[in-house]
Image 1 (tube, helix red, strand yellow):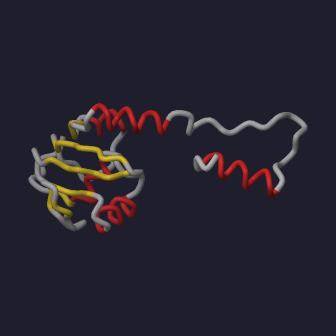
Image 2 (cartoon, rainbow, N blue to C red):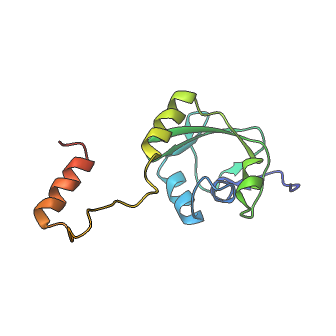
Length: 131
């Protein structure tokens, strides 16, 4: 895509859509959730082609190999060409199982109205797996 030799890691993570915003990408890098060769890096780290990234996101460990460097955010099909996903299959299976059903809104029986405070607490406990 571009003829870049190096790009800031936070900018690249945002550009290839691993994180939703550049601010989130910067914060995640600063908090040590992004590593190269097992070592945490700074947000200003200059990323090069061929480097292996370990990204901890939502409690899951993803691994990516940098194929191409970009600075501007692009569409998902173009972004996917900029990295190779090396995440182990069992980690992907855990992530997909966790992610399944997150997009659909919760339904309540017609005419039941809003949940009471006690029902809300029970629902929250159930979601957290306390039941």
